[in-house]
Amino acid sequence: MNGAAPMVMMAKQAEKAGYKVARMELLANGAPPFIACELCREYVGLNPCDRRNSTSYQKKAFPGVDWSFITLEEDTLFPKDSHESMEHLGARVVEFMEWLMQRPEHEVAVVSHSKFLSVLFTKCAEEAGSSVSEPAKADLSRWFENCELRTVVFAAPTAPIPCTAKSTHFPGGHSVV
Image (cartoon, rainbow, N blue to C red; front, side, top):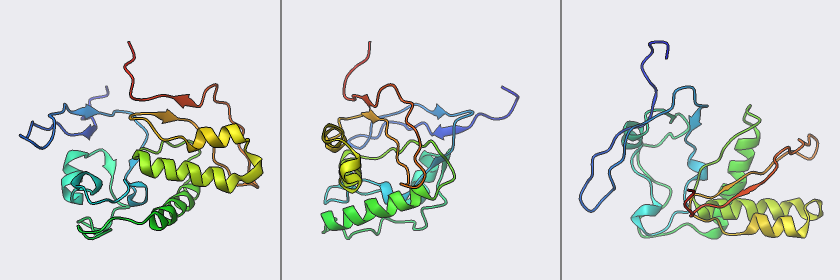
């Protein structure tokens, strides 16, 4: 370390009875940028876990995240007595992919929730049409396990990018010993 203060990605949180589990501080020195994007958030349902906390709360909890794309303090995507329609979620997925394809980075990790990711991958498989094999479409359209990692290459048809990944599926929800 060069004497600079460590970059805190996730702040330490004490246990709150009946609310959250305590967690340790997570440092991210030398990590790539983490950018919060409202478009790739969880499917908005009626449960409290389907909604986000205020932006100021999130900024304190995750100080290493770039929150500049989150413009509203409170979660106003849907009223508390309503849930997001599948049509709206599908439109949000398309808007997110358009936003993502405009980013300057060539390699990104998208961290979201199973419903959002499943809709995203299913939509991409549908849009790809015959350029993607049926087994690949089925693999893309599978439901996500907890903590699952999938590697895929998205490219505009006019600028294909070769995939060099040896494996694209890293199942989650399992302990690695």
